[in-house]
Image (cartoon, rainbow, N blue to C red; front, side, top):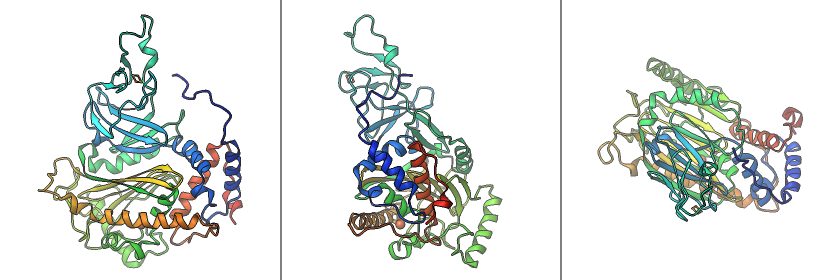
Length: 428
Ligand code: FES
Ligand SMILES: [Fe+2]
């Protein structure tokens, strides 16, 4: 394979790398990060290089590109990426960059093509990335074989598509095996997007994730979500009540009888899966807690599946219910700008207007996303103040945030070429 990196001038980020590693090595654990992590342009560039260009990212769902030639695109910072279903049915991912003079190749968010044709001078690629046609004027000795699209690592499991721009991506297969198992009952290859939304938040991507990793704010902020959501999802949660524990036991017996997995699984701090009941008497994240789609997902026979929650750091959280699923993708745009894409998924045979009303289905998470956007943006505005200093996370309510910040700090240090410090010793 051609080397991915091009010769570069001196690394302008070298001082930022050193300063970042020092700040992380000396950070006070269980405290929010120092200000530059949330608003500095150099640190943002490092986040993109060391996290978003090295880790596995949730890109989209296989059902969005169901047949050969279906594609979707996304931007990982300044790196346009193209994901396409090949003639062989396999999902391929490439840098969305023409090998002629570098134009972006596919310019739409999604679509369907017979071949990949560059809009600039019509160089034409096969769906597996091979260059087929480069005009007639490239000379007799032009070697088409030397100018295929540059591949991006891609893996699929349980209907999810993950990509990594790293030359050697981190291991992920253990998680993918479990993801496949947990999502088998939902048959995600035979699902479809009922509706989707894209919002841009004026906040650093880590504030968007931090906000998602705790429900400390739920009571004050999310009346619609709390029509169905339990504020905790684990019987080990220090706040779990006896009534919650009894409900969990009852539901787990139901799920066992239906042979759907529910056990809490963790893969480091990066991935977490668990099935948890919704509020007693509710089965879906809708305004009234009742199903938003009459046709259930996959092979499920009961709408009462609680919510299967799936976390994938750095950029996704998810809720799977009996009747529909909601998947979230977070992509940083700038130091204080992040795009959050939400997709509501249903069985592919569910009929809009008959089985479901997308406007009804999206209400709870539209409201919740909008409330969360406001929280993240206000958090950002306060952090930008010269008065900001890192503040303490609550171990009772914000352990998920602690886990996220630990994951980020350890991964950043490791990807910068340092060994993660013994965090127990570093604890302040
Ligand atoms: S840049 Fe793509 S064909 Fe010229
Ligand atoms: Fe929230």
